Length: 119
Image (cartoon, rainbow, N blue to C red; front, side, top):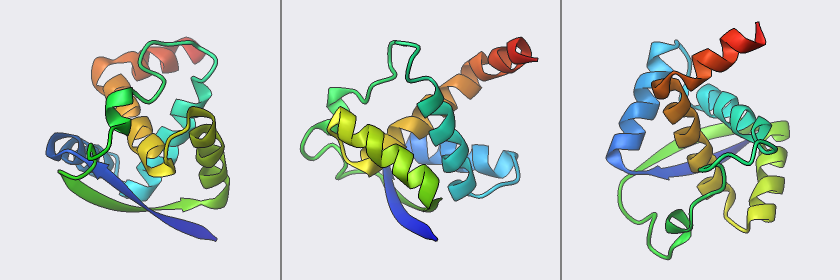
């Protein structure tokens, strides 16, 4: 079973998300699953920028921009919902943050570096 989720992003984030999904031949839903698991795997690293910033939680912060519709499998939904409760944010807010966190690591080369180190 899958769950529908709406990610609310600014135009720049939505464009980067769409381009990354297309570049890797997948859907936005598939890329979100990868980004969510990548983000959640970093939970013990105490990395600056890992927690959802308070700015993303502010009232009205999600009123502008683009709504991206995605579907999540139950396991990914459950993992994101658990972390969202821990951080006291909405699942959609956490999922959007996870996507942007992942895109930042792809663009900076950090993801490639981590892959090289794990091999």
